[in-house]
Image (cartoon, helix red, strand yellow):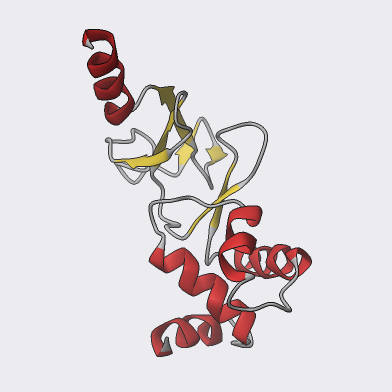
Length: 144
C-alpha cells in the first residue's frame, strides 16, 4: 500500500482512502480492464459510503496524471488499464474479455514518434475475435 501511496503523491494527488482502494483494485486486477461499474461493485462492500461519482472522479484524476489509460475497444463503455505503456488489446467477441497482447508495433516499437511531420502521442491497437478459451469450449461442445 505504501508503494501505491507514493505513486499518488509523486503525481501530486492526495492519497485518500478511496483513491488508494481504486488504484489497489486496478493493480490487483491488472488483466481485467475493469469499467467504472465493475470497480464500484468490487469496492462498495468494503467502502459502503463510496459513490459511483467518486469512482468517476478518481479515474479522471488518474487519467489526467497518466496513472491509468482509458480503452474504448468495446465501443460502448470505457475500460481502465493500469498499464500505461503502449500495447495492444484483444477483445473476445464471445466472452467479452479484453486481453493484453504483445506484438511488435511499427510506430512505438522502433521509437518513431513522427510520421509525415505529424507528432504521434498515442497508438491504440485493437484486435477482435474469439479467445483461445472460447475456441476450446466451442470445439469441446461441438464434439459432445
